[in-house]
Image (tube, rainbow, N blue to C red; front, side, top):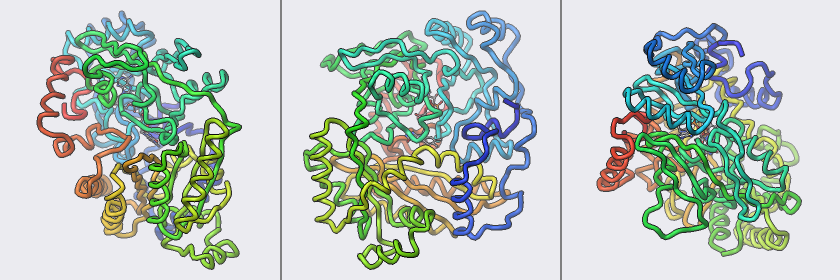
Length: 542
Ligand SMILES: Cc1cc2nc3c(=O)[nH]c(=O)nc-3n(C[C@H](O)[C@H](O)[C@H](O)COP(=O)(O)OP(=O)(O)OC[C@H]3O[C@@H](n4cnc5c(N)ncnc54)[C@H](O)[C@@H]3O)c2cc1C
């Protein structure tokens, strides 16, 4: 890989040509935003192909370098500018702007690739003694500024060596893995044996099991398989105070559950090493897809709520696109006009109201049959009309592809980012309206919203916003705008984040999300496990 800036921030392989569908989508958005003919200056891509040179030099001393090499070997300690830049930020829009502008970059002094848990134990012990900050790294897909080396120190990257499947236990339906394993490697191993893990974040291709736990994430099929905390059975973590082993039981009533402090700890307590996950039989042949058109977002949400509260097994994937996202999906395929457009209008599914609902049921045939029948009846009751399997099939085909759109969109001068929250049903529509109103105040802005994770009491709301970049003021303007969205979540009963975590972005708002005594308890745990504060300083409230 050439050590260029583009290879630092790009999603996926920079050598691969851009997919035709993505090109088409970008042209579509450019037209919608009236941004043809912008100058290169707006796209912040002038240095994409230049070699990385960091202003901040590594502050690691010769002796420290020697000591680190003694622990993991010379091939597994890197202090070159490209490796450090690659471990300076995650994938939040502001991260990419900073990297493109080469501004306010906070790289580690060294990148270290441990080979086994005993390396991690020695490294943490060493860094603790020397007061060296440690940022644990999975695949770097964080979107919350959780990965910056605020105090320099070392980035501990588990993906190179610490990525094996350790044990499949078919009788218990569990798999034990090393935390640096990537989504596709785990899923392929399981699929070959007839199982699935069921955790599919949109970042699946470039995220790790350790990162899933540390950020307390949720995959696209979380309605059926659960969030990561529902899937985790056992976990081990190396902290400055020693190894935490949460045990490995189907359930236990033995006081508090330490797994729930490790999950969501974002590298601030220690390094997650071994993880045992519940797995399920992979029954692709039984999967039943459905899609429906509704006359309004409200009607689609009501159908979703009734399904979730029906006590019939809900769909594993359960999504709704709001009217603007629905229009975007139809427009992209030219289905907002012509015969299809006319037919939709005639049936009462008018532009500005119509919303698509997507569902996939998995599991035993009798269950999927009952689920599909129940959803069908509820949809009809709420004026929904079946679109067969088409819309869901199309969504499934491109479920990971929009991640590849951001870099070429930024090259074209388009600002694009996402934020997500969760809220109970009784305030969901209110929050959706308030956030849209806030976003739309920012001039020419596209705001596509969907629900993709559903519960009996409420659901998430995921906002994608795109607008023309603001030239040299892009970063400052964007960050002000971004803060306002999270403030609006809180003002309308939403959480700071449903599945992305907190990092350094949402940290200022944690005192509004948690009571004061909760924060006292949390800080006490941090002090006990990491008294010198070496673990990911600056993330969360630490
Ligand atoms: C395009 C895109 C789509 C996304 N879609 C989703 C989605 O659908 N669902 C979702 O949940 N998230 C999503 N995310 C967010 C992100 O992918 C998740 O937070 C993911 O779980 C991070 O995994 P990672 O391996 O990349 O971790 P990293 O980004 O490397 O790290 C994330 C945090 O976890 C810590 N960490 C990582 N590994 C360890 C470890 N072994 N021990 C201790 N701490 C560790 C890091 O220090 C950091 O604080 C998306 C991100 C992008 C860019």
